[in-house]
Amino acid sequence: MSRRTRPEPVQVVKQRRDAALKALVDGVPYIGFLGVGFERRGDELTAIMPFDEKLIGNPLLPALHGGATAAFLEITAIIGLSWATLWEEIESGAVDPLALTEGRLPRLPKTIDFTVDYLRSGLPRDAYARAQVNRSGRRYASVHVEAWQDNRARPFAQATGHFVMPRRDG
Amino acid sequence: MESQKDRIARQFMEALPHARALGMRLTLLEEGQARIEMDYDPRFVGDPETGVIHGGAVSALMDTCCGAAAMSHPDAPGGTATIDLRIDYMRPATPGQTIRAEAECYHITRSVAFVRARAMDDDAALPVATATGAFTVEGK
Image (tube, chains in turn red, green):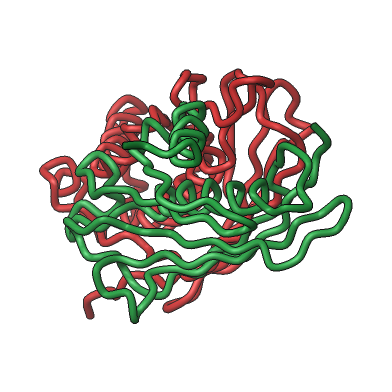
């Protein structure tokens, strides 16, 4: 007679996933430099860039620097893409989340090209972004990112990027 | 002694908090051409394993350099904002080396400035990245 294995306690699952995400994000110095953080709901990530004076490009308006916006979008794309791959590997047991928290992090995808579309000027407020992986093959991936501020329906920037996926052993 | 033109260029950079935060130095600004340098900094690293600078920091450098080139064009009356910017990453920048961006505003209309740029480390023959972008042309 087969018996269903008991589902793990919710806190154990959450802790494992959050620790893996934290290890992935904390490993990248530039994410910390810009002050970008990530919130997780299941496998969905939202990137947050809290407003800071050093993100300003035009002090007269004032508006966020296009470079800060581009970097925020690229960070969201790379972490979103890595996380999508990592999620599968953690859930299937192929990757031990403990190894991640001990600093043995997966190689990150490398950007081939990145195109940013500036829809309106970035206001001096917090910014949010989500990535959508449109294709993720063994070697290449295509990712779209949207960033917004006060209104989700009015994005202030969007981007599409192509990436080379890190080589997998075996 | 600092010339008046150098002073204006330096003041332009210092007025942009994000460019200052990344330690950018404007070394050339004339008639639609701009050159900006950014030193290596461990805080800008994107790949902890190799120590390579994050693409986002290179994007910020390219965006600033392209914007400066657009504004310095003789037919540009005032400010500018990025409409779109595409960056191609040809190879990782060598950790520890300064990255230098050179931008050229190669065409300008009443409303749009077309700009292209290259970013190089010490090996100038092999660019780290190239960029093409469209920028707004704004009145004074």
